[in-house]
Image (cartoon, rainbow, N blue to C red; front, top):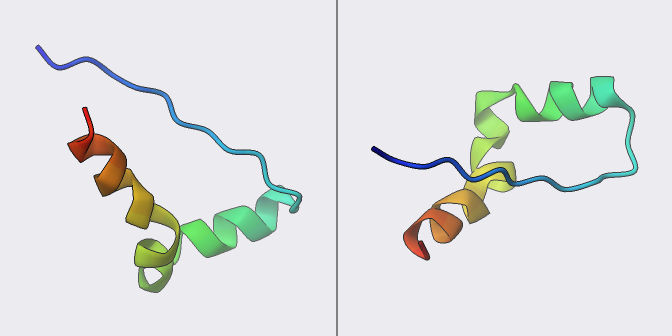
Amino acid sequence: MFGAMHISISVNCLPGKVYEFTSNPEKLLKWAAGLLHLHRGF
């Protein structure tokens, strides 16, 4: 079975603005690009 890893970062931005940015599929590669790199490292 695969384990889970929690990754978080703090940003100085209103939650609504963060949601607006991260829920836009066109922005996915901008905010999630590092996740694949982290996954491959483990």
